[in-house]
Image 1: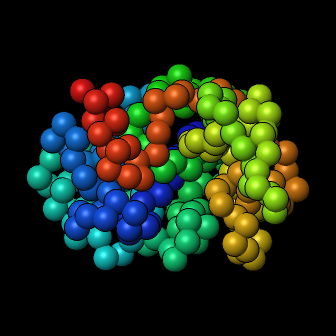
Image 2: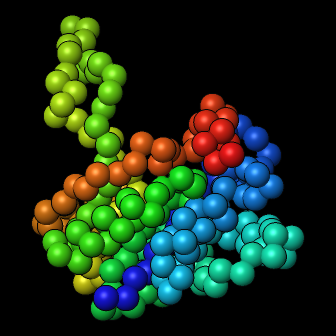
Length: 220
């Protein structure tokens, strides 16, 4: 089955508190976003790429493509006000009979093994969402203070989240609500079952300066 990946880079990355949008911050002389592209290109050279990018960054991205001699072919669509609307815009460019992965632009360390697991399971089950276990002790805040939570019952969710195209497109016909935190929540709200698969612990989302330092060390 054909494969497509939607890379979501529609946000402004305000939590990084820098002038450069976080997806364009360089590690090993290359923007994070390009590292994320290459993770999927290494896995499958024939995969189709769609980039959902904030429209104010189109010219910056084109300059970076020229500067870095970046040659991975991709379509660019306008990023929306939310992740939901960015993916919705990208789905208009995607095929109807394929597997669609949705990946955060600032997860440059997803492994080929994780990507392969997600596509394989999605082809069989219709949905595949990578996750890892929680290693730290966890407490839940309550009205009276806090209480411990059994960490063996918790999972940290990652991307790429992979779905059959018909499932994802049908789910995105819903009206947006704030509870849609990722694609899995959109699909689950539409009535589908989410299948969890093993992710890789290095597949961190770059949100803070500390995350950037960790990713830089791992990539080097």
